Amino acid sequence: MSIVALHTQALVLPEADAYLELLTRALQAARLNNSFPERRQLQNTVDTLRDGLRQGVYGELYVDARSGLPNLASFTRVATDHEVAAGSLARMGGREELLARRDEAEVFARLAAKRAYYEKLQKLELAPVDHHRVLLRRHDPGTGTAAFRIELTKLDASGVYLRLMIELTQVSSLWRRKVIDLDEDGETAAANEAFRGTVYRCADLDAETLFVRLHGIEGVRVERVARGIIGPALFSLPVGGGVQVRRTVEAPDDALGRAWHAWSLGPGAAETERPELLIAFATDSAAEDIREEKSNDPLSPLLAQRLAAPEAARYRALREQYRFKVFKDRKFVATAGLKAVAQAVCTAAGTQNILYELRSPGR
Image (cartoon, rainbow, N blue to C red):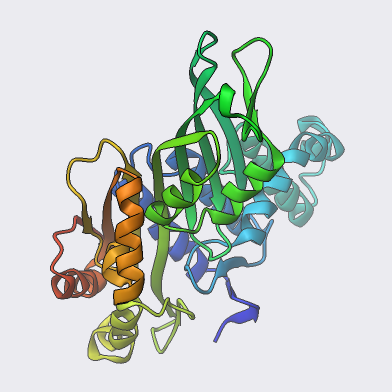
């Protein structure tokens, strides 16, 4: 067991390096579109964590034990180093000062590694822990109508990394409590604190639920809610000769988590001597222009299918007021040892999902 704090696992070299190598290649293999958080920024953060471990800047990697992804401490550690990179380089002195200490082999090696780390880091754009912005889509001063796109990228409290996008329209004649303020130039906008807080707190809700909740705000017509979610990631990392392993400790209690748990106790896990990774990438949209309502996500059926009879009847009545449809999908990237886990979950749910195979290190 590698739990070091609440929902926190610690990985050290060489297992941490094998894990980060698989994660970075999985992000590339997943072919993520703009529904998801920006891949290159996330890749930069993952690569920096790997560099920091290899060069001795970090002694361990912290992973969320539920999602199997680098946790908040890992994200903020890299972000903090990025902020102080220039100052750290200045305190180290110039290259001439560094070269003058070549006779002190251990000190020289340590300083050279840190200098290389900070020099590379200060040029990178990293994954945000919480980035919120409001974009003006169109504005008609004559009618007082303004359409906005709200984007939120965040490391969720559940440990997954997500991007939430909301498109909505406000009519000024109905603005008793404006959720978005348009500046006098008519070109920039910002959400008020109450609405911003609502979006932030509700980002973990599925698009269908969030669409209905936001539609109840006076003066607002919601057109689209879309979420792109990276995670969970389930990993198995042999230690040494493979007698011990480091695994995602608190896999979610759903079909995927249960299949993963069964695999980890079965002969498949015992036979593998290579690092294994299975990571999910989900999209979830509720919008007025979706043609067919469907869930192709084996882990998340439509809301109506999850409600008991009385709640389902009330929800059908609610949907009569809000004309939108829902589409959900999920794809997977998995090493050879874990492909069967994802395939079994999809087969049991009757869904047809994309599954990209990832080669384990050393294959």
